[in-house]
Length: 450
Image 1 (cartoon, rainbow, N blue to C red):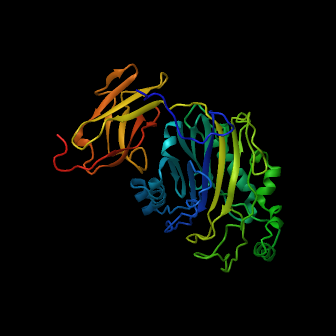
Image 2 (tube, helix red, strand yellow):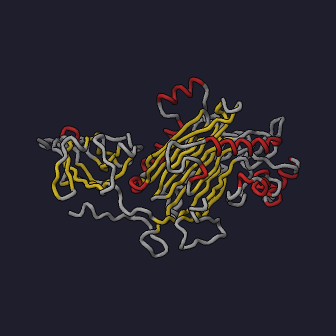
């Protein structure tokens, strides 16, 4: 029995079995209370065949939070979460984390094959609106361990208007100081190996007048505006921004547009265009990595970050902001090589017949009587999107050394058949720690079953 000899299909780099390349795709978008568009294929770069995306991180601001909408979203998933989940699930991405604070929403999706290596999930938020009493501004964060490296994703909406640059810095300082995770491992945002900070940060272009800014944009002379961008200036002056990196702003400012248009604001206010929507990252000293397009990787570093794409998407017009995307390649030293639990279906599964599941755990796995194994259809959306499940300790049998078996009642094997996974859910770790290979269950036909 080869159940406990795990081999995965990850891309290896640097000629070592312990190093992998992990693709991140981050989106930030102030959606202006609008509903989702018809299609986000371009935004998610789904037609690109050049890079593999292992994780999607979607950060939205100004999601509709009117009372009736917000109450409905508390009972059911909000339209944006449903939209992105339904879009990504058929492609093999599972929603592993989400957090919402009024109009701020953060979603994290991971390819199913990585689920056993994604651990220590936590979320948190901090309000900064109305002196911390109102959540129209502030930050929401999700953190998780990926192959033993602690990553944090922080989605922020900071104060608006040209003359509030100092207030934006103060708000960011408050978010870093106050936002905490209920964990002994990296309780603060800056404690993580790698932090991505993004959102509607609301920094503007100072000094230059409206005509000069628009003329520079029309002529694609964005470099003429860089030194007057408030965030660029703050990065050279504010200690709180020390160590944060960002790609060059080679795309049009993303605010403010007429709705359903690529024309900048033509209202009476004629707001000056600005790069309000940004994606930055910071790698900690103990992470020992870093870099941008111009910085090469170092084989001795357990974690390096390479920026592949930093761009806006002008085709989306549901809001007065354009979405911004960043794609990254992380090179990670694998700090564990095997999942905590390995499992597989035994024999041919048929509707009406008991399904046999074999599994084994590592010696240090913190098992619980509340652990369960779920049967999931290929394309499942989250760890709660199972077809059925079985408690592992109820009828567990030892069949070979550390290999165990449990049985799924034949009445629970889906009559419609299809392609499925088995996933082991850890109660103590609050997540999936083992995923089987995919397997097929034939549909029920006359004469099939007991």
